[in-house]
Amino acid sequence: METSFSNLVKGGFQRAKKSAQELEFTSGVATVIAISAVLFIVSTFCHIPADVGSLDSSAVLKGNVQRLFTYSFFHEEAWGLLLGAGALLLLGGGLERGLGTVRFLYLLLLLPACAGLLYALLEPLLFGAAARGRVLGLVPAALSLQGVAVTRSLMRRTILFGINVPALALPWLLLLIAHLIPGDVLLCDALAVIVGQICELNLVWALDLKVLSEAWHSAAYDASYHVLNLGSPQQMERAGLHC
Image (tube, rainbow, N blue to C red; front, top):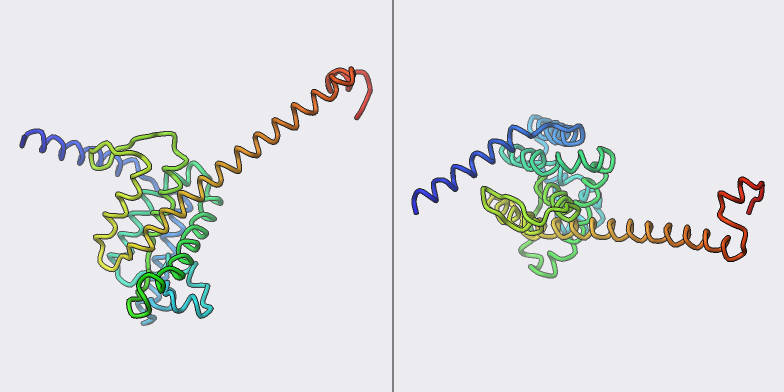
């Protein structure tokens, strides 16, 4: 029993080491981490509290909607910045290579903002005004991007610490791990995962509808020529006829 457990742990460390060696700084991830680092340094040396950019439901409901876009880039402690940067590097690099830098950055701004808006609306209803907290850091953004990644992936299962788990359950398992971080807000993390998965499902559905529509119009266009005994569009072009 001890041997099998030690082999499992050893295999997990080997896979983690291999994954760490394969990590690379993509331009979008590097840009986001650099912006977060600059904001942390400036706020630390200028004694600016991180609350100015944090996500607070009362502030958002009072009209400070810019916090929906800024809370991902603000960090109160250096270890929080390192954890957020590591999470984004681990979970976002592969997605950026698949989507492209521009679309990746667009999603990185949009998805946490949507999750933050839902959080600002739901937190007062669920916990009341007395239990309001604040959200900072890149962890919700990384989890929302991971929700997009696993939804668009063709893999049904993946490996987490040497354990074979369903791919769609991966962001939820990472959410539970992220909740061990002091100051992490579980509700915002859960909403980030949900927003990421729903966003990718809607994109796939819209893409499928676009493909079906194009195929339908193409088939109807060709059929109309044959019904009128005019031949195919290519044959009409060769004959000098135009629609």
